[in-house]
Image (cartoon, rainbow, N blue to C red; front, side, top):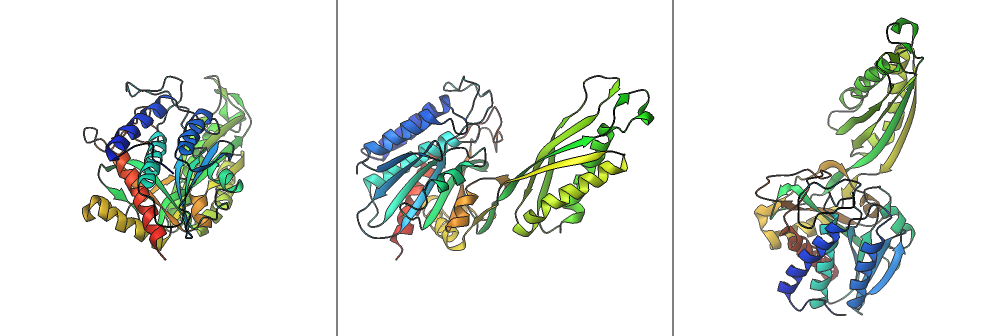
Length: 390
């Protein structure tokens, strides 16, 4: 194996160059062909064993020390979002897509970690570098798992890093237990009978029923679930009607629900069905509920979270570790942690001049590129520390 860089200074330069190239050429879920080809080429140049096409467009590379030991997986997600970029950056994307969640940085940081580990390989075991497609679509992790990313070689633990602009530069967020929420999607079609806007009594108005359904859904977290169990219900889209004086036949609501606990997650589909139908029925309408559970909550394992904390303290100091760090945002890294022990980690990436933001998934999103080496070094430290354990 060999590094593509001769020393740390070259790695620091290369990680920024790679991030900026990737940022200017974003590809959305399962379309990451150029991104995957570039990463596969770089991993092959290092002498790693490379497999392409896992989960359609994923890449897996293996650093094998040649000595018996454990196998640890390090993961980066590759997909961008269908957002028109408005950052004004010199390397901004112009194809109507955007790396608006830091995945360009995740790829570059894991690539840099590969250089750090090639320059100073662990004494034993194997490292799997997993470059995953379609995280934003909440399916890429399962696709790669189905194609053997955890089984050949058999992975003993998995770690993932997310650059996080809600945390200051120079900090690391990790905790034992729930780190990110389960992601559910819902669509509720409310059916009534339309008519003239001047004669609402002759109709069964789905728009008014939709308003009642929206309010009723908020009683799920506030009255149907215990207050110590966090749940978020957000209706994010309402579509109905086309004319100012016509009461329409239907109204469609879409949105997302987030939760941490499996016992709550299991109850939510039935609660949505019951609540929406009851609220619509009061107004003489009916409700058809489509509820999709996209990914489960990201639950860190204790030993692996503690390992990350130890290595994080060595990297950024005790004051830089934020232990009570979790969010109702979701991540399909959950699928890895359901199958093997591991931990998901936030690396603070807020630009000091911007404060904490702009928000992830914003067309103005950007992060401080100094966080790239923090992420790369944390990847390499965690891998070495895990493999060094007997």
